[in-house]
Image (cartoon, rainbow, N blue to C red; front, side, top):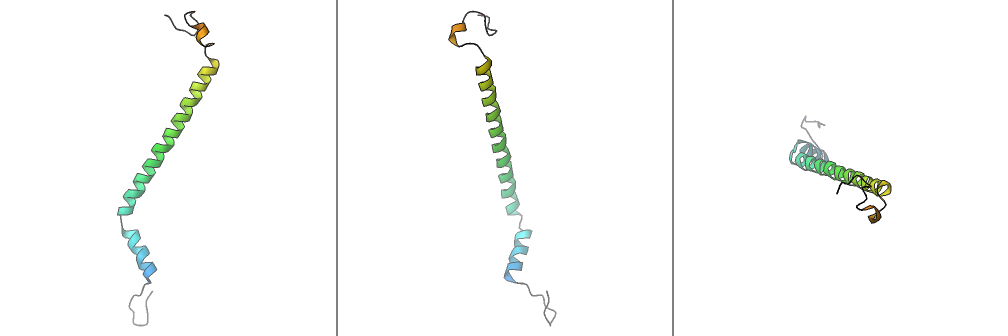
Length: 77
């Protein structure tokens, strides 16, 4: 915006937004936050998947300690 003299006048908010847009230091923090979010999400998904595999293995596995040494469950001792 310009006034009657042709001089540029900008509000403090507009100046602050322009300065924030030009500042690159916040980009690094944002990148780290996004990487942290991706790592955290992958950890949660991995733990859930591992839990499901363990639960399915326990449900479909051997009958407990009663089958130890009988050859049930694929173990060759």
